[in-house]
Image (cartoon, rainbow, N blue to C red; front, side, top):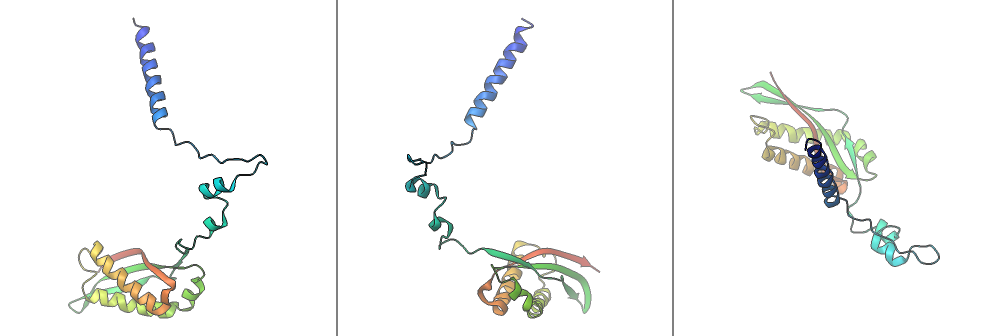
Length: 170
């Protein structure tokens, strides 16, 4: 009986492991029909979605984007009672259409000026006080920055990303 129990436990473990492997196996790979010449049939390739020029250049697919990190951080003072109570430091990147990177760098001084005005307005409205990273505060800030970026850059900018944000109280 002493030798039978470990053997029985091993068989149960092996059966459970095999059953779990059978149930959790990946779905079978799709097959491609091959004609007698050895080429995949057009129907099989079109159904698979590979090899078709129409599938590669889908006009309904969203355009590819580049991400442009603005060179320097933004430093925004938080003023309370006429004194600087804190400094907020942000790093911002822009999501732009492919090929618009050089255009962003060419207009970076104008973008930085416009962004600083939005950031100062946000700070003066109390956006960087208290729990300044709450989703509502960040949503208002991102939308303001995005509107400003589109005024400067046009439709080339699709989103503004706040990569880093830090508040240092004085």
